[in-house]
Length: 81
Image 1 (cartoon, rainbow, N blue to C red):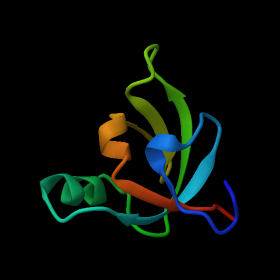
Image 2: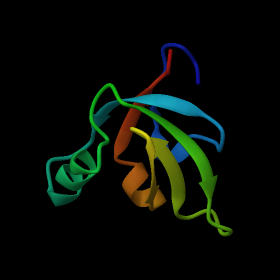
Image 3: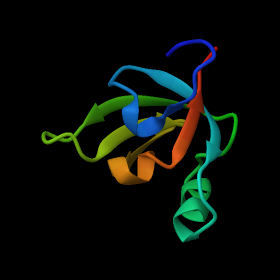
Image 4: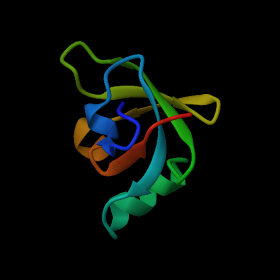
């Protein structure tokens, strides 16, 4: 990831990391993503995808989480340091 560029979690390739900057939107899905631990400042890594590329397998806060790409597109990331 470029140093000053924001990316979406859905666009991050397998093996990459980022830090959650924000969750886009103000609806039930946004709240659910926050409840699952995708809160600002948390580092998240993409560890794999299903055979057809959806869902994504993520690692954060010491556990693994699967998200659809459409859900991951709501998570804005900044570069991990």
